[in-house]
Image 1: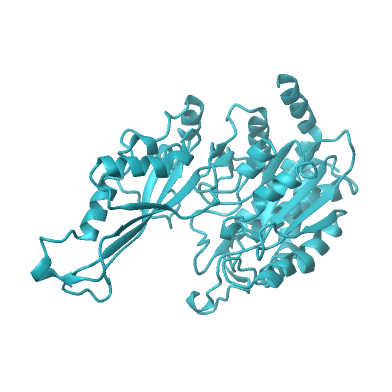
Image 2: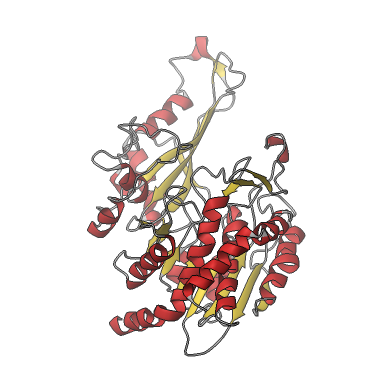
Length: 471
């Protein structure tokens, strides 16, 4: 059988309802990693669903406890066909954010896949159960077309804590470095740049979250008697934030700004239109770094965001100068940013700017670092050509995702070139009520991934050997 046959088999799996049936079984299992005491439920997704699914495809499986107590386990599954064949590592996460069924609209439930037109509703359909199941189905289609063989080796890593910050993932990758050794990573998460355009991204922006706290005194004091005499923590904190990022979203502190955008990244982003989906919010003109295109601002630059700000009682304000104020801030950053120096740099800046009373607190020990496979890497051109051959569409190339993924575990710890092929779209409502996957995009994704895996057996070793010779 041929490449065309493999793609046809993947499409047939969608057309005959087989993929929808598998997705329904996966979504029916609650896997809320952000909720307390979910260990048994998180393990059940692996033991009751994933292990039987991949064992049927000839994978040997191994369940690993999380190095961090109380966190979800990991699954490593391997299918080895030959020492002389390339090995691909693929990844997915079976955990989801909280379900909150009462927030979903009438007729929907997070643990039921409900099909309405092109939309397949359910928690995890887009993030990430649907995406890694697409890739497994594509592998199976290639096996069927090749008479039970893939022509390469596969290692699958599934974690159950990505939505809680991937606790333990980096430690597992260090401890299991030999077991996870591969020639490249091919995985799927995040959205396409738009629903109808296949997309390839090569890494992700990093994220550092921190708090700014102005805790000035015990209790509030009458604003008529004491206003003008006591520092208002809300005013102090707002002014401190305004010294870091201005009223148009431009970062003012040099230590939080990235290096210049590389020419190759700028060239790739020239082909990207942000916000083309009809359900996307309108882009605010004049917001963000001046002189950059919208694509460059979100994929090639850093942004400093105020995620939350609290001062006094917003729902029941009193005529009093409040005692404290707190803001949760986040820096999304690209490769080349000194992320480890963010908090110390802000501390020095606030002291020099007259805000020593504002405390800076790092809020997370796990930081997703910024990663980006060079756009000139041979694997990039190979993947783009394969996707275009399968879909007849010119895929979008994003040097990195605007959001954050634990890609550094693969690119830095395992030393792999990383190719991410997302299967959802920007308005999929991931992390929100009414999360959904699009049927047409799912069908297309099944075919393009089958084509990509077919091509790995045909042309992947040549590129792999070229990389090693060049190195």
